[in-house]
Structures are given as structure tokens and as C-alpha cells.
Amino acid sequence: MMKRIMRFSILAAAIIVAQPPVLSLTSVGAQEGKIVPYVPTPQEVVERMLELARVKKGDVVYDLGSGDGRIVVTAAKKYGVKAIGFEIDPERIKESKENIAKAGVGNLVEIRQQDIRTVDLSGASVLTMYLLPEVNLMLRPNIWKQMKPGSRVVSHDFDMGDWKPLKTEHIKDGSTWEHTLYLWHVEAGKK
Image (cartoon, rainbow, N blue to C red; front, top):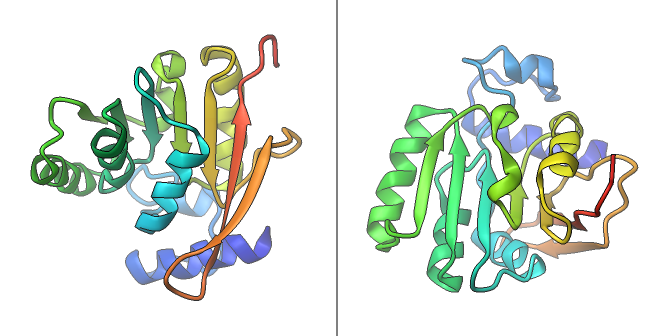
């Protein structure tokens, strides 16, 4: 896990100037209300996340910390599903809206400026995220309470503590990095 946090830190440091060497909720939270730095998910990882979730017609995909909108745009373009991204950074929101317009999926994709800790997850059948370990754990009770049984959750690089994934995959992108993807199905009555 520390190796993944360090990789996340290295990538984030390249994007966010003066980022501490190891990220934590406390250090990131001090930056303009953000609890997670912007580190884009490589497109081949985006594709695999959506495949792993088995996105299909009728699904609604939510992406927490949606960055430039690449996951929601890909979900709409490839699967024709409604997709909503939640992002707090105005620059990323502007970039997302430009990407949505370029892709021609404005009828299916929406970006909401909202703190991911306050999102009502009940409308999602698929949830994607690339957050930090402690943020995943912070959101886990909301996932269990708000998402319907059978909904799918896919996390890039970080697990959910003792909530055992149904599937874990390791994939390489075009660089030397190896990415880990985790898949869970929401269970009825999980607390």
C-alpha cells in the first residue's frame, strides 16, 4: 500500500507544486478545501475500470473526484449511459465541461461542483473513484447506506480496508507504473 501512496504522491507532486512527499488527508485538505489531489487516471485504466464494473445500458455511473471528466465521458461514449462527475476544483470542472462538449455527450454527462463527502450515492448503480485510502474508508459507510444492493464500486489503486473486494486486478499502462483495480458489489444490510 505504501508503494501505491508513494506513486500517487510522485504523480501528484508533478501536478501540484509543493506537495508533501507522502499524501495524507490532513496535508491535502489544507489545499483549498481539497481532500484529494488531482492525478489523472490513464485512459487504458479508465477503460478497464468500466469493463470491470460491467457497465451496461440503464446504469448510472458516478465518479467521485472526477478531475477532467475522462471516466464519465468514456462511460457515456462507450456505453451510452448517464454519468455524473463530482468535483470541487473550478479549473477541473471547466476542463471537464470542455471535454464533454468535445466528445458530444452533453446529453448524458453532468459535472457537479460538490464535496465528495456530501454526495448522495443512492442514484448510482456504478461508482468509480481514485481517492486516498482514508477517504475511501470515510466514504465506505455512505456507500453501504445509500447504494442499492448489487451496485458496483471500482477503486483505482486503493482498497477499502477490511471490506474484501470481489476482484483485484493489476494492469500496466503505457509507462512503467502498475495500477491496481478493486471491485466490490454492495451487499444488503452491510454496515
